[in-house]
Amino acid sequence: MALPTVPTAVLNAVPATHLGKASGINYMAQRLGTVFAIAIGTAVFSANGHLGSPAAVTAGFRPALWSTVAFAALAATTALAIPARARRTTAPRATAHTDPADVPVAA
Image (cartoon, rainbow, N blue to C red; front, top):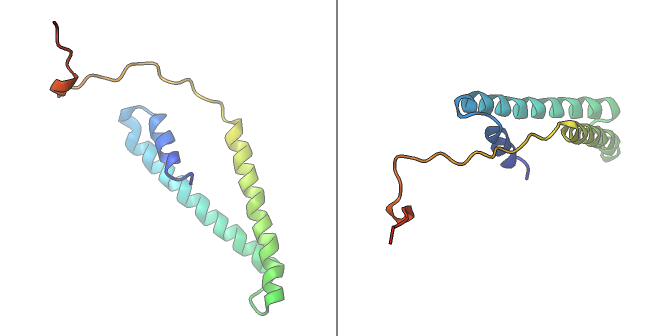
C-alpha cells in the first residue's frame, strides 16, 4: 500500500534537477531494506527452528515474525520522528503550450 506513495513523496521533496538522484536513492533504499528484512528473518528462523517438522517450523516462524514486527515498529517510530517540511506555496510554472480553452476571453 505504501510503495506508490513513497516515490511520490520523495520526488515531490526535491527540486527537478535532483529527481534522478532522489529516485535512484529511494529505489536502492527500498531494495536494501528488503534484503536486510529477509536476511534477519531467515537468521532468526534458523536460530529457533528448522523445516524438519511442523512444530519446528512454528518454533522458528513465530520469533522471525516478531522480529519483523519489531523492525516495522522501529521504522514507524523513526518516520514519525522526521520533521515535516513546509509545503511549497509557489504557483505552478506557466508553460509555453497553453490550452486555448484555458485562456480567459475579454468581453
